[in-house]
Amino acid sequence: MKEKTVVSERTLVLVKPDGVSRGLVGEVIARIERKGLKLAALELRTADRAVAEEHYAEHAGKSFYGDLVEFITGGPLVAIVVEGTRAISAFRQLAGGTDPVEKATPGTIRGDFGLEVQFNLVHGSDSPESADREIKIWFPSL
Ligand code: UDP
Image (tube, rainbow, N blue to C red; front, side, top):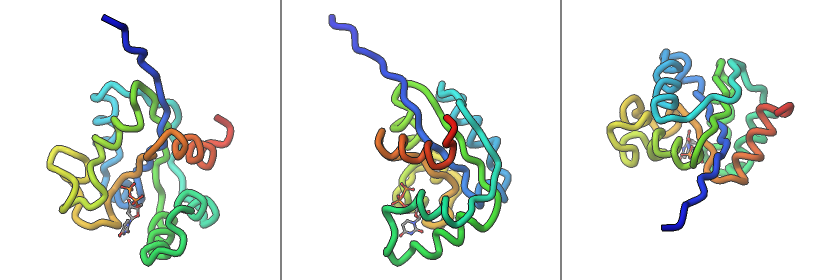
């Protein structure tokens, strides 16, 4: 049988301001670690407008964009670089779908703790290209 090459990836995770204010930082980190992923960098900070707009650039012009930028800059968040095998998909699986009620299933972070689409607690990069781009935004020195 052919050995499958296991590729380690990095992904950018945010515990958004709602997750921080609700005291769910430890819960999110515990789930990341239990899955077998590693923390490569971590910072508690309040995002300024420029960082938030760059991070969510793909949504510029959408109806929810203004509210989303207000929300993400509205309080401290925790930015984390998570590392490990298939880290991008693995964290998206832990997070659950964007809508915490209609899409995220119980057992996921959003499915267990969220009710509203905007206040869905966490962000995780959706592709290797997004991960590279987002890690540069939040951790330019990495
Ligand atoms: N969002 C929102 N309203 C919507 C869709 C998305 O407020 O109708 C917010 C929500 O916080 C989401 C973020 O915008 O996490 C980015 O949306 P995306 O579709 O990229 O979802 P994600 O990758 O975070 O699941």
